[in-house]
Length: 269
Length: 238
Image 1 (cartoon, each protein chain N blue to C red):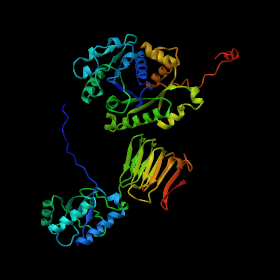
Image 2 (image 1 turned 45 degrees about the vertical axis):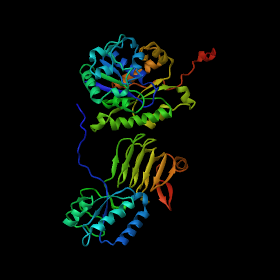
Image 3 (image 1 turned 120 degrees about the vertical axis):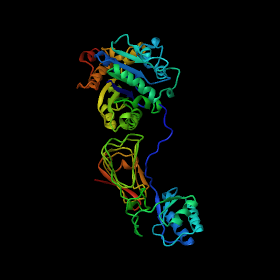
Image 4 (image 1 turned 180 degrees about the horizontal axis):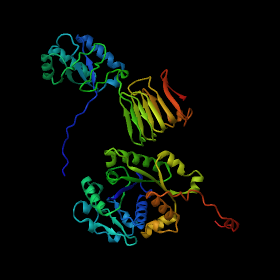
């Protein structure tokens, strides 16, 4: 049976799709057969981040409406073995997703895959609620600023009251993924610290992804940032995947990098 | 898989009950008016039924019509009669009221009926109702609202900013209290809020409230209790 994980946040633009792409790639790289589903019907982005936008023929809504089979709609990732993408429809809206339709697709995927990653749209309306309804675990993507933290708190409340697990009286397992973290700006009190966010949300920390140019570069190239193993962001996502799989890994990139002695001597920036 | 268009379930509805002992038009009207004046917001729109179990004699049709008129003009939603004789039951039905069968035991004249009712009955005095304390073990998140009706509320985890916790009785918060907390909302001035970590956006007792900026001056992020003294909110260290 596959494990269904939703990547959600409430707020838009915090890095849900980037994180969905990186984490699903990371899971597949470690030999877990993974599918990542774009629930953002009407504003599909995941295929761009995954670099497969030109190969989209059928989409999630086509499968729900039985206009195409799941096999036809699933896109096999060219870089990573065991990774598949189910793209969203760009021409429809979020009402095209029905509970029964989504459940049928997830049930069919669950037979073949180890992990199903649901990339949620922003907001707390139907689209976002559909993405989280069937989830057993949730990765809540948060930026270190107050409005993002507030929205994450809201989505945590929805997770624990409107998901299928909640209806069955069980709890969805929660993970906090802090993205766009900039230790320098935290030090100058322009950003909330990891400790601040942890104190407000009070859920286990899955990872801290440092703000990095590599993320933008990866998005534009259509290659999940986790494949950029040189970058701090890529390494931080690697660590997060390890923790998701149950390993204990120490958190990195939380402190300002000290300028080296020689760099300072030579006046390097 | 078509969605069914309805579902029938058992439920219990909170309502007020008016125990009628005897009836004289003018006396009834002015007494009811006075009662409502004492707490207009509390009574407005309240569902209400009339309990005839302790009523001496029989109500005539014009009398019952008058009662209906008085109740409606004061904002009650009178929906039924309980108990009384067969002809009374028929009269109630003829006037469009629901008739509820009498409870088995005859209620005491001075107290709300103690035996189990088909519907839980809210008496006008909040102190008179006692329900099991409501205990919430998970965090109360932004946008969520928890209401402990007729009882105390115990919160074992945090209450986030943007969340609202409400109780007719006291509120006890063992995690950080960062949202809004309203105790004694049915005009119970004796209700209190107890918390381990006071960081609330607003605290209120029986409709009196203070905001975050006032709270910051007293016991901020400390264990504290909030209570009402001479109609003003007091905050004291625990």
